[in-house]
Length: 315
Image (tube, rainbow, N blue to C red; front, side, top):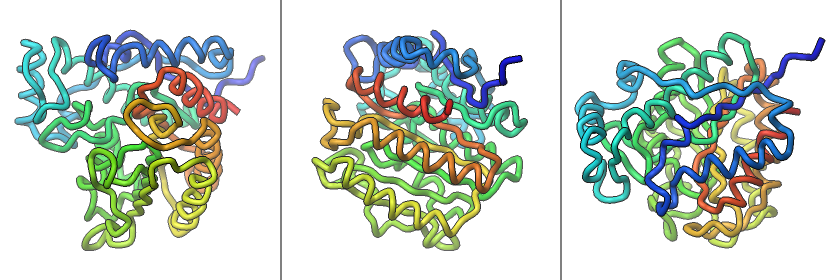
């Protein structure tokens, strides 16, 4: 009898529908680029493939303000205007698409908590810029923040959130800056050169969360060698904690050749980080590691970076 997969991957048109049109960097082709490579490499034979799942407003409201959710619903009907100050356009059905992203992440949390799987990967997820009361940087609902609040509601703490997207995970950092139940570690391109301009190494948490947050800004042009040095620093930081659940935003816009960033990693960096977090997860939280695809706007990098991560997860 074949062994049951320990990893699940979410794929489907409902996830691919989260995007801002064919001519936008965050378009539906991102999902297609990953799925094509995923199946070509026969990774679909090593994992369980799950359909996207939507979620209810009350789950989104764990993180987001009700007034903002209602704004998204209204603009989802008209498809007009922006959901922030000019980065994140509304489109018809945006509320439903964003709800499938958040819902798939929450569904993955439930599967991991139920020990159905040890690892989960959701390619279109990790929308780490959205604030509690606003969209930001192509991110409508912050599925990372929703998952953190959902885990907290189930008394699963401390939670570890790790982010290697080229852009700083500001929507997560500032929402939980003073929260001692979230351990935060983020390696990103320096805010001196890249949106959102935050994530200084001096930002280490506030009040009872002081010292529980780690930001490592990288200079433009940083390569795998630089990443490994930063990751060693991150690993030393993490050794102080015993997380009960790990969330990993593995944005591939930090791989060389991305059209809107300046880092020069290879997919090996993403595989390395995944292996490290799998070891930490197996040590402290029965392997519970939920990985979100995050950013990435070079389709070849998406194909190579995300499949490198899934290959590690699938063993």
